[in-house]
Image 1 (tube, rainbow, N blue to C red):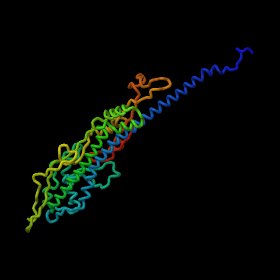
Image 2 (image 1 turned 180 degrees about the vertical axis):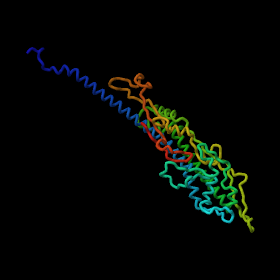
Image 3 (image 1 turned 30 degrees about the horizontal axis):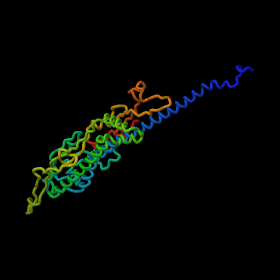
Image 4 (image 1 turned 120 degrees about the vertical axis):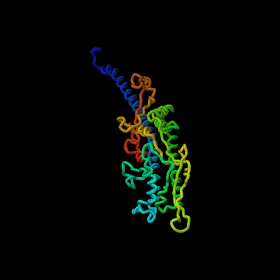
Length: 369
């Protein structure tokens, strides 16, 4: 048979065309997988960094809610709930129920501490904690509370209606100052920690978390921090403080008859010591957070995915088999470069979470990668 008519080795011709195509296909799969792996690594790093940063705000809001409501409620209610204020024989309309004239009730009606309006003792299973001020302190029960200044710890009516000794009033005053000074120090420490972890350090935890999970250049973290700042804006809080206080009580003067005790008053009012966090002076009472700041973190009903929407241009590997520079192809991307996106929300799981009023420490972090 003539050589040019022989069929032997004819597979070589298509193979010469097929094998290079297969190799190109293998390289395409490899480069696509490498690019996808980098994309997934950077996306996970961004998600983790955003979650860690949002947790700082969630912890601060929850702890502030405790300082505003549950802590003073537990201290004063449990300390004075079983401590009676005697009035039988001194006041013709003396209440019969002992709970109606305990020192906890007197302090609550004078607006000294908040407690559950419905009388609840435990809140673990409640969606909303109905802790609020009563009586003369009711003006505090709003997002922009009105604080009475001077505060009246014990009124002249309390002194006239009850066998209320001056020495006891002084002891309660000392405890009141001690408790709210401590709460002010705790809240100020929490606020300082939040600032140092977030704004003051340019969101150092956020940057380090992203950098450690990607190994990118140091300039990738600040861009993510800028995106977080742009989404949140200024996080505004305000310490509510009072500067003066009045209390009354009966002093024993000796002698006989009804003149054995006489009412006395701290008049002029006592200057309260300055608490940590009260820049203008005065004794700490509560910490409020601006509604715009809370809404920025949760945005209830705002968008399909409420919360802070973050974006970041990520660092694509520069080398690939096809020598395509993905970082320099603005025509292929909506924003001119490849981007990562994530949305993180604080408080979206429980719309009743609140710092004030009705402080309910149920802020949670939820993420929409």
